[in-house]
Image (cartoon, rainbow, N blue to C red; front, side, top):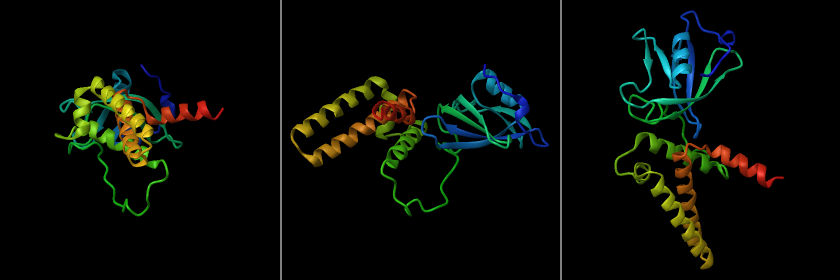
Length: 209
């Protein structure tokens, strides 16, 4: 069971504190709900998120009826002590609308193009969304449903295709096959619940020495 310092948390007059729920791997914000001391304690005891419903005035266990539970990882507190950030590994969509996240963009996402490597983070988030929603007929859904053996097979196939493209000195073919390999590697990281950030940190630490 995780231990926290209760004196550091500032609950409001209703005994509640906002909890921001974030995917531990993709870092996407999934939802925001409220916790009281009892729901936070049950979250700590069970390792899954519990909240307080202000409309129903009762505790609720995320995923109790839908099966879309959230396995809790790190719990953080903001500098003012009045907001929780809870990183989770979700077992399905966070939203009651059956979408990966409860949030949608209000701004024009096309105004600024991605940074040089920002596409990796965007692709990781997209794969996380596909994993949570499991859209019927989607290739990513197919990979997750087939499991790790199928994903590993595709990683091996794409690695071989990269080698062939490089031997053929075909830049166009190499670009295509390398992008396929990176995609399947990110699917594998998601299946293994390994954040891309951890891999990038390892990469930085290993080769910057």
